[in-house]
Image 1: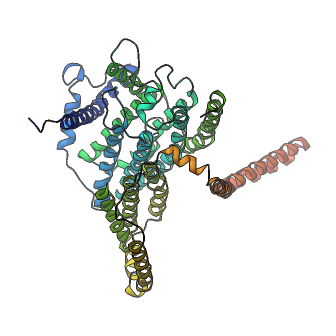
Image 2 (image 1 turned 180 degrees about the vertical axis):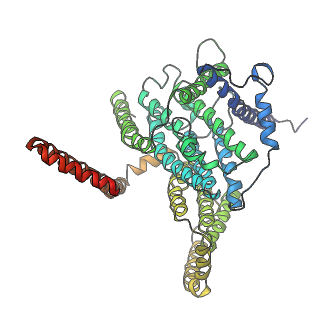
Length: 327
Length: 206
């Protein structure tokens, strides 16, 4: 057959890979809602959802059925366009970010030269989901949540980018595959420990997870920006948050923990093991830490994390010049 | 790449037109965001992915968020839409539109008569090349921009500081009152009584 050229084969393989990665991410995002509840219950000495199916594994099916068949209601005082657009942005921008993450040497969607910058662009777009949702709902609590979310995300994105620049300087490339390959001998957590600390904090803040869940603080804002949402639109915010956790975990693994590198086991297993470790860490943080006051969160970001990343970047640059002045 | 360039250019122009003609402030801002993303796509098509990514991160991801933030705080309702509609009379936009049209004709004629061969292409610029030229021939401009931003930072921090200043003053005043009370205690009991009485009356008023 003359149409079966190597090009066609490569295109088909790339398409199948992209679809498999997309499905895996969405399914793991949905499953996480159940896993998180079980883990939280384990740490708090109770059972959690354990009635539906073996070990409560079918709880997620029950939840999904409920979300799908719930009435999809748009309040009459809401701005329709923005109300519908917001959950789509929330999920799509995070899903698109998975494009740049190299999973194994052979697996990954796109090999972009601007790699990590693409993630920051998508994280920047993701802010609009919360902003538009809060504004379009026509609700004071939702608007307050949106204002908090935008201020928090903007402040934390500033040093999130700077935290990674040390790695970019050491690798000499924005490409995620180059970054993973540069970690074959030493993972970047060792030379870039402060970059790692600040990136974790910023990652939690950007996904609005505990203890940085000011935008949806149940006790003060009664769920914040998605207070007026119901049915599948709310479900998209919900699953989007879990996709955010998986994304930040995968990024931490790729940037600081050597991606697929590891002894004995095949690359895909190492990547998944490390990612699952960070996802569980996210859940443990939620179980362990209380929510700080909002102004404390902001001043911590600007007064502690930002100077720390700047000093880290300065020292990294000095070390690179000291070790190899020719570059 | 040519198709990508023309398509995203068209989207940018249409979206920007809607920003100008739109009457609803937040909807106009959404069009402006779309326009900025389209301009980023133009950069991608021209082979400058670094500039494109920065365009989205800085303009769409940070500056426009602040715009939307402020407009949302203003809580503009139907009256703002009505006012905007009233301002969009041909009398208001006719003059600038004619002048801009003249400039457009000048630009099109210049492009048509120049050595432009009609193709959209360019070699891909890497981040390293951008950095080399920023810290090479354009070093002075970069430093001046940095100083300008630092000045803005200091000014903003000063403007935001006034409240903290007041708090410090308040704390100092409270401390002085406490000291006075302490000296009153030292001088004798009668003054304490009067002080307590006065506080009681104050609380009664509250």
